[in-house]
Image (cartoon, each protein chain N blue to C red):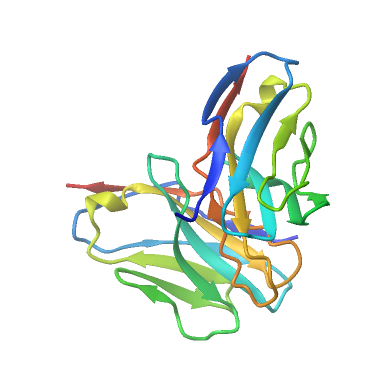
Length: 115
Length: 115
């Protein structure tokens, strides 16, 4: 089954304790991205990657890191989480090829709470 | 920068009725894509319908159709014969026709179908 898998789905942590949210897709997609969803703000892009070893900042990258060492994986790293990073996080992927209509396939979301 | 505006934070309609969700956007691009995503209580992001800007014909998917007015930069979603399973948050989203496949989302409309 074609899917984007995120882990963990739920996490409660404390300020300053490093954490990683993993994302993996099995569709051989070139493009991957992270979004955060907050009430009244919709979804906003954190980082994106157009291919292996190619990453770039989205609209709200502060406090986050990413890496793309393999095509299928795109982990989101919070080096020193703070309460304002409490949010619902989505990983998404797409074909990324020219002419693609750009449909993003989303993971099921990761609810992160930073105390 | 592109912006997407959904001016209806919440809507409700009786089962089997028709409802229209509004979306406007602002862009200087000529080539782009527009999407409606559905987010039920499960939090999953589900693509409802997509529209390519270069296509004049409005997209339809079963009970879902759009009214795309390019000059007015308007992209409304019509749901016919509404069903209880249509209860969800609906997000309108914009994507440029090239480069970073970032989706710019509106703030969402929470739709409730009343039995």
